[in-house]
Image (cartoon, rainbow, N blue to C red; front, side, top):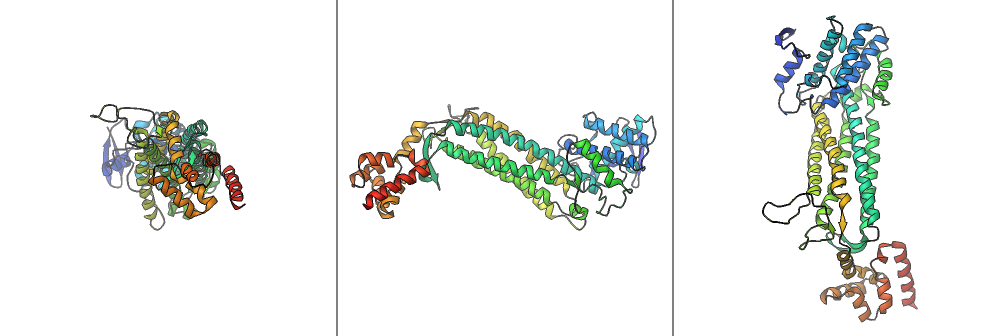
Length: 471
């Protein structure tokens, strides 16, 4: 056991603990979520470790820190990055202000650096935290982490987009009934609907990359309130090149440190984009649930891969498990987004201290999407099948295609044809021929649902018939 002191008193610590008294106080005062930085939050800890190494190198470069301590802090940081000290971060992810996890790392690096220097003192505040503050280090680490997490989400989006594109190509000629307001609408192909999904995913891919780039403007160097007081001359100019080398990212100081430390709108933007992505995928999942419903009492147009039995009592029932999983993911991401927005709004005066909540929410949303999207692609979309005969039958017999009659003969005539087709359980083509609006060959060609999926060809056909009718 060893004794450590702070201005609140003294405390006994286990010899094998690299962290110190402030870490223990943080654990004692905030053990609420069951998720520690040593588990879910290690990405943030590793980002802070890179910052600490960059700061040590910068402070050595400007003559503020001696070479030995700078070297030892850098080696200790490398050990954190290598995962050798993961068991030394017991602080809960929600700690109030973030000081506890920052000091946790400062203490671990100081203790390990002292060991590397055979007992030469490396102080967590004086040396490891030189020219820094929780208020600029933790937000900078969060931004670096968010950048990397977004890139992981982008890779997951790519996997899903590729699967959707493959199915769109496979079903490009399969005609089905379109629907608006859950009612019959004009025919489309399954492939056309899926190209809409693909376009949505590509658009959000670009949005995510834009948000990722926004995360590379850091408040590092603003120290406690944005004035930079506490950092030695030349520190800011020196630390960013080192951090760029260590991260591989094009990091740069925020245009205004006061802005960067007071406001958290960049996380609102990121979270909103994650929510928008999740909402769109949830919409896709909901469509799959509807279109695959049945198989005999529902829409029955699509067949999803069977991944596990869907009932504990009804044999043979297969539920849309993967679509339902994606909807659940959306609900969680939506809740996280609400928390991020509220945490950003709650920033007061010169600092937003609710970054622990933001960190936990962003980490979870990214993790859910990074894990969920590829599984949805692999186990659901890639194995999607279509009941082609059923789709064609529904598209061919729908009264919605009476819109073509309206385009040629007027809305009232089209309405009358549609009404008669529904009342007498006939096709629009049959009614159109009976009423002498067109002969059987023209009806078969003009009212072909396959033709209706091609806007230009359909427009030409309607124009020709309108001309013939006027003559």
